[in-house]
Image (cartoon, rainbow, N blue to C red; front, side, top):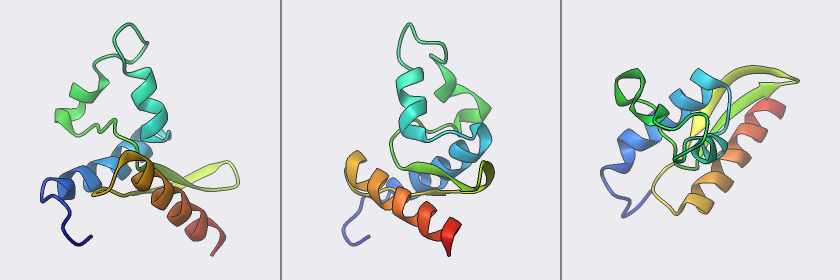
Length: 93
């Protein structure tokens, strides 16, 4: 994305990895990773590859996860919206 932070590249790579590794949207995982929640500290696992920012979405065919997509460079809401649209387009395309 034009004018995106260079650091967003690694984030964009880690988001789909996380979404597929745990078969969950990174947005949902973020809520579970807060202090006192069941997965607090998960972001430090897997050699630090786990990303808990919105924008990582599993791609499903029916109920089966077949991959994931990750988007970074915008706000969390923007990243999430684009990732959801991409996952849906891929699953139905």
